Image 1 (cartoon, rainbow, N blue to C red):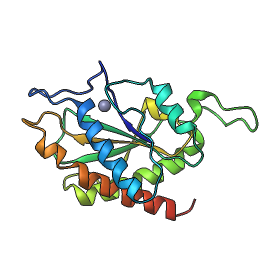
Image 2 (cartoon, rainbow, N blue to C red):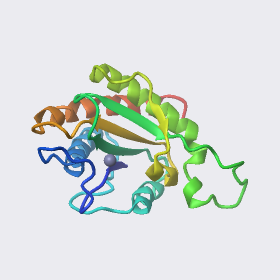
Image 3 (cartoon, helix red, strand yellow):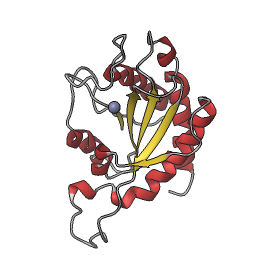
Image 4 (cartoon, helix red, strand yellow):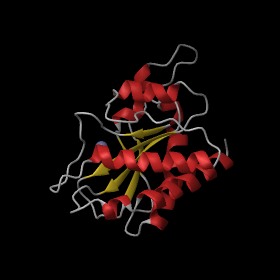
Length: 192
Ligand SMILES: [Zn+2]
């Protein structure tokens, strides 16, 4: 499940020249979808056009499937253009998980914390190779929309929308898709 963040009236980050995060991430998401589909994966986008689904609706798109992977795409207004970072939800677990009772919606991510961290580590290693200046390790962050996802879930953020024109940013879309595709294939091929 690929989640192009923001959308509709929510533009996300905006650069001085008018580059908007919601448009950039939709472009990235479309390319990533096409590449993953060519690898034989079933891919769902949480939004296709100018809409802005709620965080719950985005999570529900992933929670509808068994064995899903959730990837949220963002573009920052800061950071060196041509770099990319991967995040997993670093919210500390709120006590032991219940054995039988259904898990509260906002704790859906907790059982997947380790898997998400492993996925983020694989993705960041690829991003580090593909985009020089990118960190080698992913970061834990309280990423609110990931918290409701009952699947391995990460957010990827590229820099930056404060470019004069979108070309250097759009040029990242294919290498990013290839990096994520390699990481997913390593993730699926590994334990689990
Ligand atoms: Zn964003």
